[in-house]
Length: 218
Image (cartoon, rainbow, N blue to C red; front, side, top):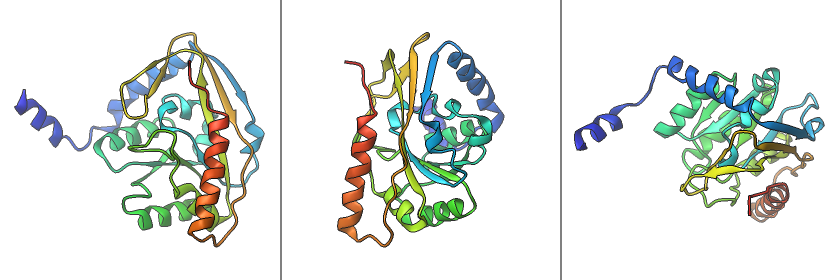
């Protein structure tokens, strides 16, 4: 068993095609859901946005939007091995990735994100990822929006019924025939040239906005 675990740790990358069956399975699984989407006009502005979505409700998030919108999107994904798997899966949905986080190699990641916004891409954050705490937003999206002038758009995918994993974020897997409610919030304009106090003020504002549209099963 130890030998197998050691060998598994040596696997850095699987072929991209290996994730095609997973992508097909998710698309089929999605067809079993009842989906309601509201507020899409908040991102269909023709201008790049910075979106924020909690880590624990990502499983169907890329599939909630038309492919033409996904092709204009870039997701911030951790530089871990699991992050590589997510990156390869996202490729099948037409979503590009920036590898890293705003806590590790922050300067390089923000530089790449700024470049993407200037090229017209939407940049998607899971602001409590990759390790949490759950529902605690980091500062990365605020920095990016302040530097580029892009609006921050909070987005949530709420499932009426789901399985919950015993992970740090209590990751949610919607059950078949569950209702998925996708809420796209109004864009939030972040002032330029913020100091640390200003960054924290707007971090709290955006976090509160995202929490107001987040619904967990009681």
